[in-house]
Image (cartoon, rainbow over all chains, first blue to last red; front, side, top):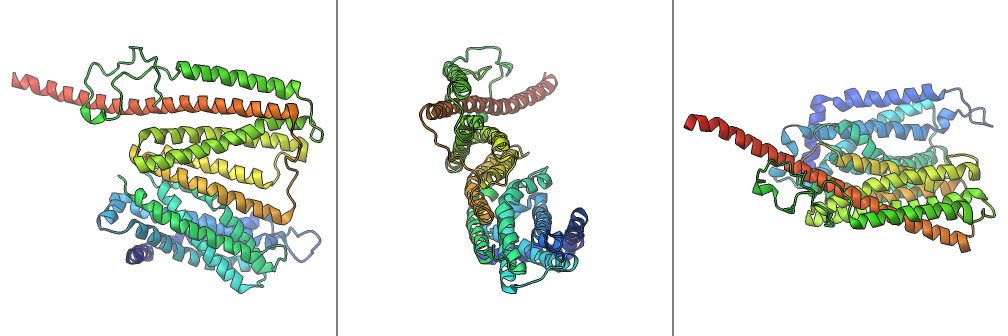
Length: 231
Length: 276
């Protein structure tokens, strides 16, 4: 199964290296979202009672994770668009690839891409929103755990949504409500990591992300068997 | 299957006298499907629901007095709490149906899960609406970022997604299997969303004004009456929705059988002149 996971992940990443859809389309889209947030919220709005902190800076963690979620949706849809043609999933099954391996491999490939997206968007957010950083370790842990949460749950739901048509419109509807707790946890943990907010237990929220990703690790591995056993 | 016993109608024999090919006749009864989904039992159930809901209106609006702290706004609870109960019951039945479908592959439970999910979404909409209407006089706003309200809204959207998967253009058994997986995972999600949102709001403020009113005597009776009536209504809706879904499935199968038969007849006609 681990070998299958590795094979699937390398296959997907190789396709990405060849096609550059994530780097050339999804990544610029994420950056665009960050800029649009700035336009919608206005950089001149100041937090009440504090002349030096803008609203944009204050809500930067949430905006960052929203931009990541929206980019992740596209990456997930892309991951299954790869397999939509020519009965690829059937071919994988006939090649004897473990369904759990397909699940983990797809999730891993998306995770690698998402980390790259987060790195660029994070850098972008620091530049355009101007945020401080007080706890780098918590931030790093949050990034990793949230990435796993998004990709593990997202891969399962994107697979459920993939159909003959209407695939692209259904993925957000299925994935986003499920990821609502992840958005909460990631935003609050990031908030603590950046501003050292005493009201927010950042590490506890990071724990929630860990539990969430472990849960979906198990559920996805179980569900992919019957899921691929179709057509 | 609780099939209607009043299936004597003959106008539904639209197969043109063609024998249905054997490979589609596995789990269908030989009698023609009924033209409507009512039966003696469901009619009684419907009447019971109607009487119960009317009585609920009467008790809720007229006979019980206004509550001490929330005054007349508390009357909404007679609708709000039972619809919440039905929502959870409906989604739970979707879970049960999904599990049984995955284990046994029975079309019956797949359709029960789908029918229950649909009614659950409907009632969840009622819950949100009645919650917002209750919030206006109580909190001063329709929407409060109350943990229950927020997680119910997420739940609502999540099960709309479940219904969307049930309508995906896929082979029926593939679609049913996916819906079943989703029906199970969604229920798991209900808890994650609920607790994370509760935790989130717990940080910023104490619990918002809750349902900490004393409910006793006539009010308690009204509440139970409402609960019973909504449960009967749910059962009635569920049975009808299930029967419609079952008929739709039969219709799809029959449509296929009929098309096959027509093609066969066509090829037979084309061949026979040449032979004679």
